[in-house]
Image (cartoon, rainbow over all chains, first blue to last red; front, side, top):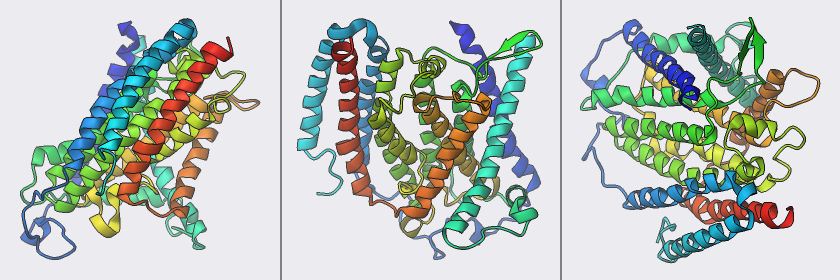
Length: 119
Length: 327
């Protein structure tokens, strides 16, 4: 069981070495002559103004929350899908029940405007 | 010990191939886009401009690294690293050919093939979103923050439909191991019975990689360049590499799931795999040359209100077909 993950773990190390290597290489090779204007953040050429952390739409939180819920449900489809040939009608009915509950939640979110970006 | 050496060599070859693919792809994209717009594209460096990507890489290497005032230095450096490592790592489970026999050893043509390969791949590609949001947040730039937020919301929204669009394939193959999915397509590619799943997957894969017409995270005319506005030199290049390697990965997954993987007549299987992936790459560039960018509210509505229910219906329809009609 674990042996199939050992090569992957090893490859992960290779990927990390490459990632950190690329980051380090440019630090070593590039020049470094900072000045105040260069270190300013870019706002189309004018001096940055206002707070750095602007207020942003609460919708982003909502999307993240809905994603959590629906993604867990999407993942629970996978084992069912793999075993579908054995489960057959039983599996189908079980999943129909599951999708019914999911559908009620989905319809509720839709009705309350959860998928609507603008009022 | 020999096994460890083989794995490390394979890993290095794969990583070098992916990075080379990135270089060639940037050049191809500029050349092809040029042709679409009746201009030659880059043609000065090397024969026909073919060394352009090497020159670009060298130039980015030698550029100054700027970390803006007030930026969280550690997170600022961590973000592009996460993006690149996740992009390289995700490819580990994709089989790019049948196992080969070399020096009396059977070497599978993928790094590792866990029996939940597809789940592993989705999990790792999702990690790339951390690079985007952390890069946008740590830059101390309003545009970067908005770009990072937008892209993460977009990616997680389309990930749902993407995850559900492949359920039909899992039902048909009866396995989540990518090797088994490829061998289940010996006679019939899954694009035929799973055409709806394939179409949803293709739309989602373009949205997942932030490519036109779903390139809202870097909508130049409203967000400067989105989450990578403040990144310079090689750190910018790392985000760029991650984007192109992710394009290769999602195209390879599309090939594996729907187009029979490395199966094909006459030519060697590895060549077939490359041809199919290259076709997807051309499709990506073609889309960018043809379609205008979507509006953000329409993009989100399309993902949640159209793709998600259609993908769910497709999964259920496949289940009904398998368990009732075709038994």
